[in-house]
Length: 132
Length: 353
Image 1 (spheres, each protein chain N blue to C red):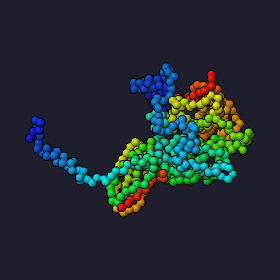
Image 2 (cartoon, each protein chain N blue to C red):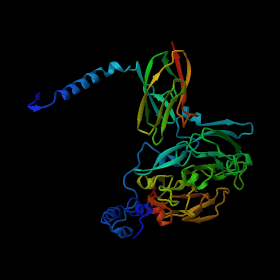
Image 3 (cartoon, helix red, strand yellow):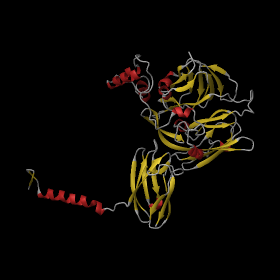
Image 4 (cartoon, rainbow over the protein chains, first blue to last red):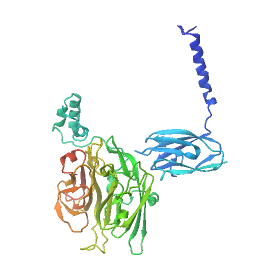
């Protein structure tokens, strides 16, 4: 067959079409997060981007929900990471001015869990509260 | 073939002379490396080009910052607390932590520092003779660290003896009486010592005389405009030689942002040398003389000079009063150090010529 006057094989067209269909289906095939929470590391503390005045805030999640967690490192000259062992979640060290994200699978059981920055755990740590 | 070290490159280009840097850089690219050691004398413009980011350490604020005085009151309470004691002295409690941090020591030049509370030099600790000093130290760094205070204290509080290093994630409480009055310092005393110090783990520990007990007039030191100046340097390529010299970390900071002083008002400089890898450092002030109080342990001056030499760990209190308005240069009288960043200006205002 020909497209715009150029001869192309039918197999190639079929392969491109199949890829396009798969790309269109991708959001349906992978489960999206229920919501997004953005943390900012600054002055040796975590802050919610929406609340820059409360250091190391308590993060409130609903049991069983999926949360996309974004960490922005705005702590000049310092590297920070994020770890929540009880949720089996974490982010590797992020250089300053960098950011990274991960998906948290919140446990189905209500409870309180710890989150922290590994190198600076003595100052950068807070609580995850899971409610039903 | 001439060996071009990073140090000589910096001398030739970045930090010695603006005109020289352009010419020398061009010659380097032209493979005439030897000529880089002889920049032309066409300009007296000296020092770094550009500025460090204002988001980082502020050398001007550091001059007059002790006991976290620049921190907002609610946040300051978490770092520093004063509690009166029955005998009229104070219990002074400090929170100090060690942490790794990249710091900007010259425009665009970053150094992987080990810091106390994220800054180099660390926060200035200031007490009055007889106060009780209690420092809670937490190691958030990636290596063992400690705090070794100069001053009277029992061996358990030394922070330098075997086993006294604090492991990453660990903590220790140092507690002792502020004694004797004078200008002291604190620094990490974990081996290899020269690395732990030159990476940035040091700060000023200042003990004011208690007016009732000080010998002589018994009135303490007279009021003055006071500055903390710590002579330091950075080995940026870890060859046990320094490439950047400064007072209070940022090369030429006070050339670009002169220290504002007032004609006729006494000034007092708390001067400490922590420079690693070089045997001595010095302080020279143009157009003036100053009174020297070595280690600050006497209220009587021992010397009047315009150039003072200090070994590593030595310190002195300098007092003078500006007679004339205008700019007064101060720098190490080792010209090499001065040209690699250890140079600044006082700008005296008020009064008449």
